[in-house]
Image (cartoon, rainbow, N blue to C red; front, top):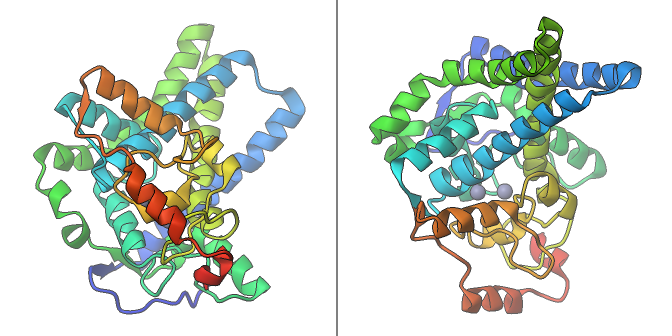
Amino acid sequence: MSDTPEPDVRGTLPVSHARRHAYLLVLVVLPLLALGAAVCAAWGRGVGPRDLMIFLVMYTVSIFGISVGYHRLLTHRSFKCARPVRAALAVAGGLALQGPVTLWVAEHRRHHKYSDGPGDPHSPWAYGESGLGLLRGLLHAQAGWFYTARRRSSRAHWAPDLLADPGIRRLDAAYPLVAAASFLLPAALGGVLSQSWAGFWSALFWGGLVRYAVVHHVTWSVNSLAHSFGDRPFTTRDRSTDLRWVALLTFGEGWHNWHHAEPTCARHGVLKGHHDPSAVLIRALERLGWARDVRWPDPARLAARLADTPADPSAKAA
Ligand SMILES: [Zn+2]
Ligand SMILES: [Zn+2]
């Protein structure tokens, strides 16, 4: 994975050796160790109902934070909302431990600009079309690029709107605190509910460490699997797909083909049976008066995109 194809793309900056090794540790090795430990622990002792409940609460907050906060609100501006709601969604995204919001947004906007072509930070097709190339590409898209990429997206280039927002800049600066809270909140909850240190440590493991590893790999499946396998009901220039089980785990983000067709649309699951809990949450915020100017799907554009689709979608994907 050392020779990642990296064209000279505008809006990127070199990453130091030390930082790449830090990414390797925090974003690749630690989550894998946590998942391995989780399998061993679940095999040996199972997961108690208290830890399971804390895991699910933290998972739900993290996934909504990424899908509704980092992604639909702050990257694609699919809706507007009051500052406290915007701040709450951004903090929830931070709890997923996928980096400060401006860096996440910069990488994702570059992904949309160059999707599955030279310049995409994490296309599973980066190593070609062969079976081995795709396998290598899937590993690259899932987590390998955190280490192998020698250049990062420039926040000044890709996210100047966010950098101009003092609230977002403060949140970026407070990211280490948010990261600490991502572990301490579930641990404290476990300690209080159990009235014991054993409950504290066990909730730190399941609701902190294991949840962070699961949330990472579930989110990154959108980058890898939802650009490789699944249906392509809409015409796009990239290879984005719809994958039902990824959509289920990511609260709607796995309906990735429509998302690439209409990136600013607040709803990703637009076809019959395409459930999208993130869109349900945005609708609820809208009804409460906490979200406004929501970009819901335009039926005419949707119909046009479907009508454009060739009989054999794979022919368009090439
Ligand atoms: Zn994508
Ligand atoms: Zn997107």
